Image (cartoon, helix red, strand yellow):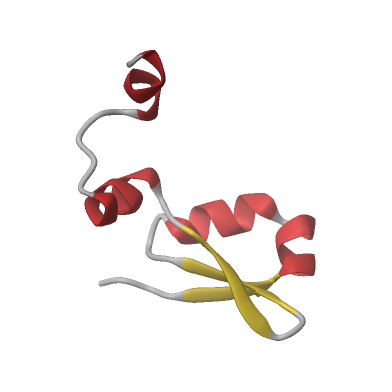
Length: 62
């Protein structure tokens, strides 16, 4: 089951580790002044959304 987490920019700055752990279970929406501004995803979720099969390291070498 996917869990959606929302954190403020300030909360993210204070606890990046918490946000990274939350991203293992689903997207983490990062708000700025009360509005969604960014989304933190696990690399697996990003690849699935992007349809990417190669790793970032492999992409840099290409």
